Amino acid sequence: MGEWDLLGRLLDKVQSHSTVIGKVWLTVLFVFRILVLTSGAERVWGDEQSDFVCNTQQPGCENVCYDLAFPISHVRFWFLQIIAVATPKLLYLGHVLHVIHVEKKVKERMKKQAELDDQASLFLRRAYKVPKYTKSTGKISIRGRLLRSYVLHLVAKIVLEVLFIVGQYFLYGFTLETRYVCSRFPCPHKVDCFLSRPTEKSVIIWFMLVAAIISLVLSVVELFYLCVKAVKECMARRQDYTVTPVTPPLSDRKAFKSLDEMGQNCVNLELELQGRKLGVNGVTSPENNNTGEVHI
Image 1 (spheres, rainbow, N blue to C red):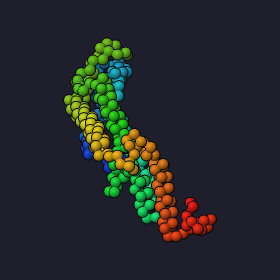
Image 2 (image 1 turned 180 degrees about the horizontal axis):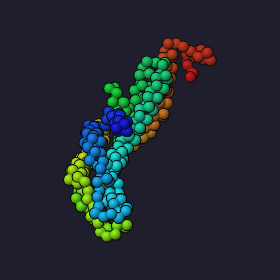
Image 3 (image 1 turned 90 degrees about the horizontal axis):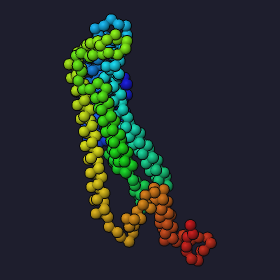
């Protein structure tokens, strides 16, 4: 259980940076998949090879037939499935932490630069919160780069879930039979092999399959929800956007997406405001005492 505790702590951090549907997905992963796998499935499959009996005394025949019937244990297959579908979530967590760290460094840099004029400092702080991913409550706003990363991790989860469900069907099917017929070398002829507790194992197989399908459906619904939400927000922004003498047209808005260029503009504005303030107070340049101008 130690390795699952580590995975649980990591996914618990992701929960605060996910949507409501993503939190439900994590609940299904922990309660209906990891918990059932560690508490029930491992015990049921603990005797699978020792109780796999074939009606032959040929040395090596039982081992060969067991390997043919079960290329990989169901429990190990489900372990790989859970780790695989949780990996995109962990990669998204790494991206979130990186974005938060970068945004924090930018804000600290602007706080150091904005120390001259109160009005200019306020303008600088507001300008450097665009794009702003951290809300005042400490939660993350899923938009921009984070939204693209979140959608990408959802697509990866959907693909992995489908691949593992299809792979399970081709490896074993979804139901275990009581008798398995094997004719593989070194068996001298067709032999009958018998499984232990096939009905109980079939019930757990179907339970894990239903849990995987529920997780798949939740991921698809979450992806559809995010796409619809993004389209609605984009349409709302276009409707609310009005061009004024100081507002750039839509075709030129890309020029203002660079955070460094915006910061430089803000610094220039601050220096200009400071120069005007000093000019009003009557401070003059030593080179031009008669004009009352300040050269910066």
